[in-house]
Amino acid sequence: MLSFGKESRQMVDIDAVHGPCSDMSRELFLRRILETAQSEVGVREQPLGSNDGPRVRQYWQRTGYRFPVFWCMCFLWWVIDEVCEELGVENLVPRSGDCDTVEAWGAKRKILFKTPQPGDLGFVTRSKGTDAYHVFLVKEVHADYLITIEGNSNAGGSNNGDGVYERRRERRSNHNYVRFALLMVPEAEAVPSSVALYLGAEKLMDSVIVRGRTLVPVRALAKALGDRSTGVLRPVTDGEIGWSSEDEAVTIHGRVLGVELTMREGKAYLAARDLAEFLGFKIKYDPKKNTVIFS
View 1 (spheres, rainbow, N blue to C red):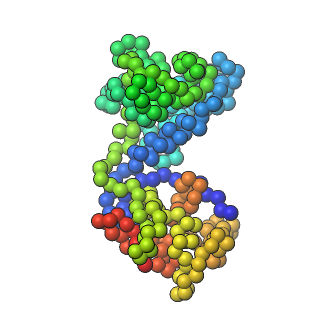
View 2: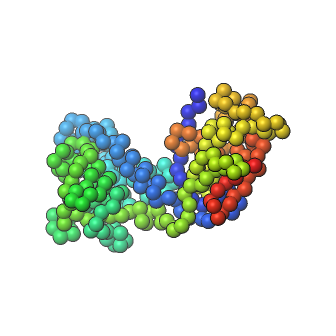
View 3: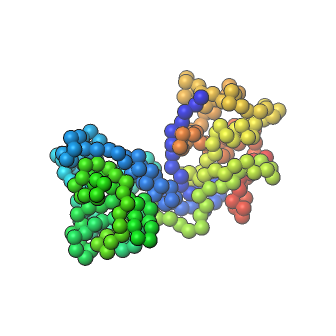
């Protein structure tokens, strides 16, 4: 069984022929922010109360510290930086473990708000809009409360707790919200982030647009289309899909698929046109219906 990694989604040209252009999907970016933060819930200081520990140390070292510090902002900067590296986005948030510094940056860039949205950095202040002393990531927004993910906290919401927690936090007037994704992932309107794949008039599946290309899942689409590269349509099953260690490439019916793969959420993706040509199909894009048609 093949095992593949993960990749980002971007919205640009449909298959390197024509189509609209834009930057990365903000939806994907924020989803990966929340998923990355969520995966750290349960991390604890070692020993408790030390602002240190193998994982905690990675948070504050990433922001440039060489000694244990209050690390709520360090944790979220680490999360943002991890996702930026993964998706190829420039991290514009100031490299700092200081809440005031990042909140002031948000105010200067006009992305500081009083109402929250998922993915915002929420700052707790001591007075009306100044002197931030704790930060959390907004996961869910409800009428009277938020679900948050926060580092250097505890079950009571301390600004110097012992780990990474998911919390229910009451909405308060001394909370300010920095919507950093507005700057880091500017998003054009009315640009598709997915595309429907058809074989003739039959819909096969939906797929995504990544880094300027329509990408299709190699295994699933090869099985759905079959292989007619020899002029005769042959079914493709899991048994006909393999991996060449020598070529470090996927094989189908023993032929090496010698083009670069994109890894996304445990599956291998390939540009639609590349897989179509490899399997002996033609391809065209219908911009009015936002569909890719194999024939």
